[in-house]
Image (cartoon, rainbow, N blue to C red):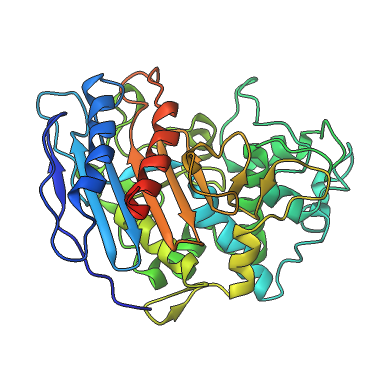
Length: 377
């Protein structure tokens, strides 16, 4: 792959600060200034303390860091190595590629019933759920595992996932469901003999050079670089279900930086390879990033990526259907347009300090502004 021309980091410690110009290889500042203004405006309204943003099109890069990691007096300015809880980006950065990698190796059959791997899940309408239904959120299962009665641990979560009954015939209805990816994370563990965090680290993150990406950041000594989430938790997964599971799950739990997420996106645009290292076959990337939902379902999903559904806000008003990406509840998203060879990454901790902030409007705005920055319109 063509060597990337890196840009200077734009650090904005206070909302409203101006952006510095970028060196050769960066986007013209006139194109990126609206992006900076949109982000700093949300920070000024105290809907998030800070964020990291990265836009790439081939050798052209715009990287901005904005605000601070919290509202505390001793808060740290956001930097390129600030680590965020990326929430449901876990599904596409870790879980889906791990499943597809095992499918490449003949260890998982994507068209097999889930009960082939989990006989304990049989009955209750679950026998018709295929692995591909879990990947595309067409299993018919509910959105999440109930919190009550109280439970704790990954085994308890698996038992509850197995007990969930589909509300619709599998393959006929789209519902975004964490249960799907909790089961997929367990599937990786069952088939590979490694927990999801270890498998993804060895087969995805290490080969891609994603050195600041992983689960359980406190065990990695990353606490000082992790942006806090709700109730000022720093380095503990925000998702309550995954927190009860111990911090590792297929639905959430991953922590990363904008630069690392960008490396993953570059790999996808290159058909599964980065810097001469192949991570996924081109066919697996196609399964992950092109529509794989059954006929008759209006929402379009790949085996991982969102293409056209109510959650596709980061596409904005210009990137076409056929571009793809994913969001995370903590205020994170990735969107990729293969037609223009463009992607952008946005990471924030909008759930700090009390989980009440809403930045959904920013999702679509940044998608539109990113497309304009690339086109020059």
